[in-house]
Image (cartoon, rainbow, N blue to C red; front, top):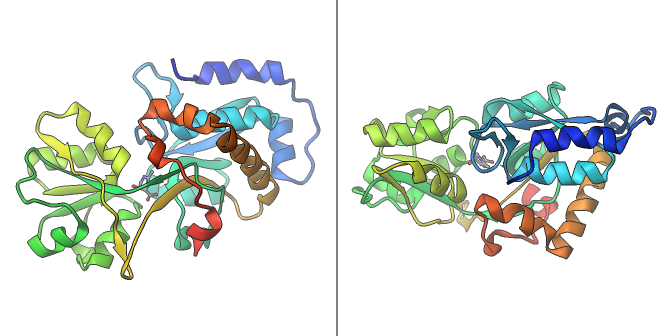
Length: 277
Ligand SMILES: CC1=N[C@H](C(=O)O)[C@@H](O)CN1
């Protein structure tokens, strides 16, 4: 079984954190013994499963890293994807733990760890892909009704391909996207290749297209997802990064992510610095 909130809770006593908080966020979290993780209910990035357990690739990774940093307990705070950065910056949680893509616009608002994975996009379409949609350019060319999730990077990718922003149907999440495609309300819902291939497993009427790269300013995009921190929390981000780098070197990071459907090709050497440009 994947790690659980209960296991993380048990670790509080084990960690015995009684240090007094000083100015920096890491010391404060050590002293509290708890870190609040912002998640967006997106399988398999960060979600509450059918048994009520808080899990996902990012929370499971965060549990390991924070345990090693002396913070034994993780607490989920669920919100929609568009509210993750505002929620972080208004202190509703301490870290965005949702596999968020690292990009220039977001790097102006938060600081990121180096990415734990790299990813292409994919579409949810009706079975058989009747409009033959395999890229954002296909969506524009065919005038397909296009949807994606609130706050998703895929909004910008569709706009970069020439899709009118005002015509994009913005939905709560990938489950709403699947429902909208199945019912024929939209022709296509865009998300990460991992999100779409996971959510269509529940469907006999929809499928995920092969992964493809969005094209922005004439360049094919390979995205990388990481953890976001408040701009003042540089020590916390740096300490987190140190642990992530160790886990990458030892292969442990892939072992944590693999049960969530990641392939080895989705592991990455990209850095936040490169992705922020
Ligand atoms: C994990 C994830 N990444 C994309 C983003 O960061 O905008 C969106 O597809 C939403 N979910």
